[in-house]
Amino acid sequence: MFLFRLLFQTVFLALGQIWANKGRAVLTSLGIIIGVASVIAVIASLDGMKQYVLGQVETFGARKMWIWGYVPREMRTTVSWDSVRMNLSEAERIIENCPSISALTPVTDGRWDVTAGRVTQPAVRVTGIWPEWHEIENRTVLRGRPFLRIDEDERRQVCLINEKAIDELELDIDPVGDFLLIDGRRFLIVGIVETKELGPMFGGGEAQSEVFVPFSTAYTMNPYDWILFMAQLRTPELAEEAREEVRFTLRKARNLGPEDADTFNLEILQTAIDQFNQIAAVITLIAGGVVSISLLVGGIGIMNIMLVSVSERTREIGLRKAVGAKPSTILLQFLVEAVVLCSFGGAIGVSIGQALILGLTAIPDSPLSDAQVPPWAIMLAFGFSGGVGVVFGMFPAIKAARLDPIVALRHE
Image (cartoon, rainbow, N blue to C red; front, side, top):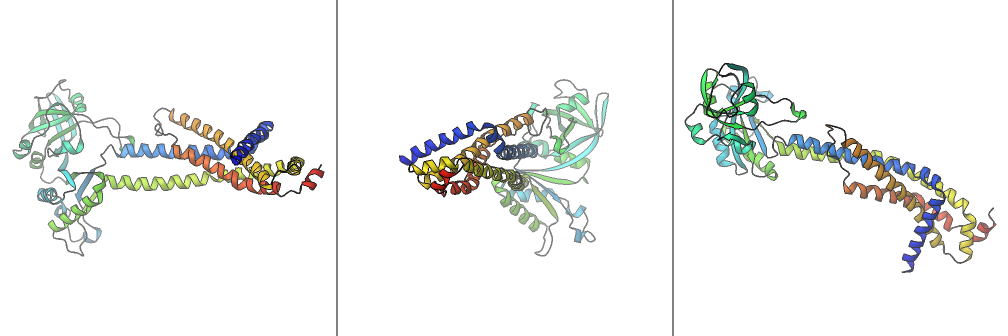
């Protein structure tokens, strides 16, 4: 109880000293203010940039995996690119032997002239897919129906188009049931899928026409197109398990020996996201450490002003010791005053840092629009500024506690 009352009185005494020397207190804590504001602003900005990048990356889907054929550099004189192309038997093997994969579709892209009535659009992207594409891409069918397995099995000449194609091909508002000519072949429009907007990081911009046809139909139109597989993991946590399962299955299917390099590549978006999170954490730590140097500079200023304060209040210290104040009480008084001064600077620094972040988020189309000061950053800033007060206030406090009361009372 006594210690609590002493601490309470010491805090109010420290606040009184700060109020009595307001200008000096602000100038003294300027280093702390700048340091805390910098830490807050940098951490929040990096966190906002991280959220922006992750938001852009996850437009592809965090559970996606891409698999494609690849000729290692050491095999390029003996192995052809055509021989490493993915094929449907490999797709079936992956589905059967990789429990971490929930869905898979082969994908082939071509550029064909598409005609609707009197309007022809050259080099429209035509993509061959399985019905599982709908589950993997999660793109809503706005009108009509999605692809069915019977469309694939019977190689039907049906297609899906996106909303942009309706405008560019000057189709009816509801073109389901109309026909298109794709490279001279007649296709029935069975559905309209939403247009997927990519972020500017990945070349996003004005949407373009897209046409989707059953994979088997696209393959008959051009059996030499490059094929890749797009798969979906059951959960993002299974990324490494899925990688090893697919790798084992494809190596076995291609009769690759222990010494042979993989003749395929695979990429999992979740793996890239995890790596980016690790890199972002390191960058945040380094950047926070660099700007924290200003807190140390501010701490030196605090120590300097506290030494001046001890010198100015030597007679006060001597008088307090003469009436019975213990050295520990004097030490606590000056130590608490240093901590309160640093905390005062920390509070102003947090306010300035928050104001900076609010200004950045208010900029139109700013990549930092989602930036916000995380609670842990505020606690870190206050904890660090309080720690600076303890470390750099200790020497002046010890000096005050060790003053001889007789010498102190004689001090002019």
